[in-house]
Image 1 (cartoon, rainbow, N blue to C red):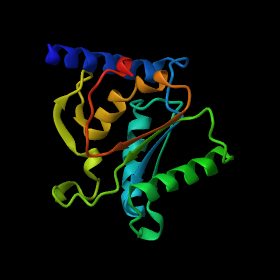
Image 2 (cartoon, helix red, strand yellow):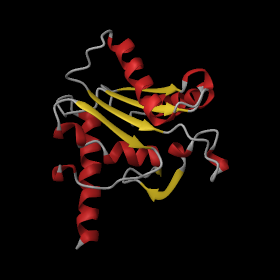
Image 3 (tube, rainbow, N blue to C red):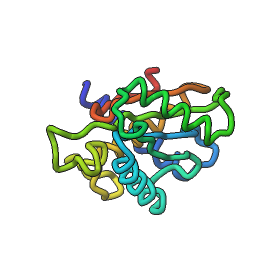
Length: 174
């Protein structure tokens, strides 16, 4: 029964993702920000995001970006979260972030256990799954698809995820 529930949750997440790409009225993230260990990694993340955006694989009304740790100094998840908030405040033109839905994915690790993905980061490493549209999936794709239904579950706020922990659940349980 648990596997049937997870399979249905996966199908529901895919449908929410499809709606986030096409329906203007579908609740969406205002910002999706990835944290990076340095500017080089952030630049690579931005290239990945830009490529997906150009292909129509990311919700068009969500602002996607990557924020590096300042000056290459490792600041940890707490410091990186503060950097994300500072970045959004600058983009938003206000320190008042009420009413926004923000997805923050911490992904600034060095990929020491999987060095083949250190340049792109573990977040963009492939996973052994083909998506319903025929694409080969990455951890990032799984995050975006899996979290597409979350903005409808709250009016405002920030959801912070660890980029190396993949969650599968049904947002209707929240």
